[in-house]
Length: 410
Ligand SMILES: [Zn+2]
Image (cartoon, rainbow, N blue to C red; front, side, top):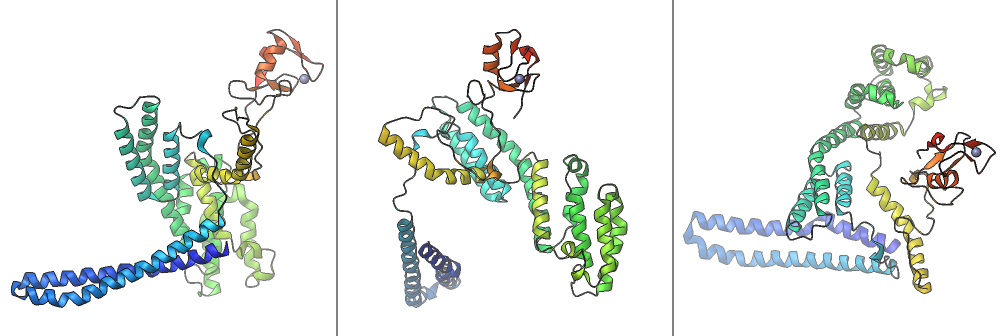
């Protein structure tokens, strides 16, 4: 890994210096200058061209030299990569579950680019996909294609609006992170107060609390006198904090109480509030999360999560493939992996329920049903056991009628 890192850095440095580009630009300048001279006075053509020969050759040589170096670094980097990742083939694509839903995959990619703020890349991607689909449309066997097209064109319509939303999010985040300006974020939180409160979000208060702390420390000019910072923070609290009192009385009391310890906050019980090194990143993260959730999206990109989970699963899947080949068995269950893939807790989104009677995992078609006694079995088991009339619960002495069973939502 060290070697790869080293070669990568070398290549990166080379690209950063962009010597090649400046060399080429110098040649272009040279040629343009010559053209202008000749255009202005055609009699000077031969002498200008003669004068051009040596510098142009030198310039070409320099460009080639720098290209050579870049090529050799690139080669070394490729070799280092090959060396590190040898003997690790990717699983074969026999079970490519995604190939049947290109529209969904494309939508996931487009949404990922938008939420990463890569707006121009997303626009190019969407236009290229639609071009490709338009050219694939006529003469196609027609299977499943029309729906795909619908899914994406719908997405394209939406992407305009969603693009605007994400652009807005990035603008606010930029102000927050780069300029230490919380006001646009506070303004947004204020406009969405009701929706945020319904979610039990503390975002608006968190933002305003940080604004208070920021003012307290002197605001824009951190060298400002202690007294003026404190005064500004106090004024801010008087002006803004009354709306927070019903919900955050204790927190507001802490902020105001801290005033009494100034200038010795370091030794006070409130030092964590006033010297929190992660306060800005925390609040930026909360903002991103709330913003996405009001759009009906998760805070992290689903594509990123899926790809990471896939990378975690890859070694297991490769091993499985080897075993299946050796034993000549096949993987028959289409939508289910034949092995457990342990994922970190933050990657677990959907609870599953296995029916204790049939030992089968429940699905949308065969959902878990809770009987009045509180025991849960799959619907098919319930139908089989009850045969439409009153029956005894397989786990307790209670009897119940299938119509009293309730569907359980996971
Ligand atoms: Zn029971």
